[in-house]
Length: 150
Image (cartoon, rainbow, N blue to C red; front, top):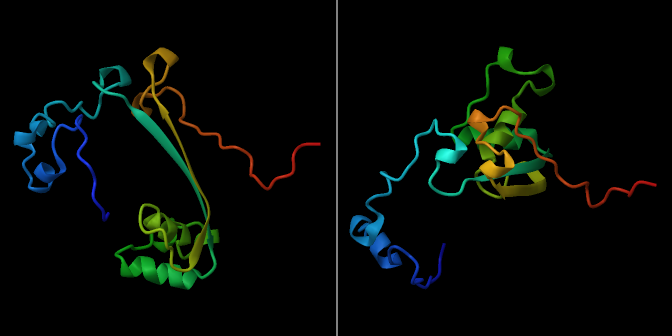
């Protein structure tokens, strides 16, 4: 990111101190001690827990280009015996390789890219996914181009 960001009074450290790597003197030294173990339940976390769920739909208009770009960036397809017969080249794996990468997908176009987020709360019966007794699901709105029910 380029630009100038103002220091807010509520920050534990100034941007300059963070750039110089002076986390301890800026009051950030206790960060590791305040972490919660990975096997903790929702009620054990000292701060808020936010769940995000993403929906991404991609049209692959040039599979060869997508596969070549993913391979050039270190991706390797699954072995042939581990692939579904309708995706023998692992196009799905190549798309997944780019999910958290650049906006531009060589040989493909993003059709849908939306996200939901909500604060998990114990008093609503929420739990982190590792401890959840029910599957984590998401429901996205109907398509904006779909016809309303008659």
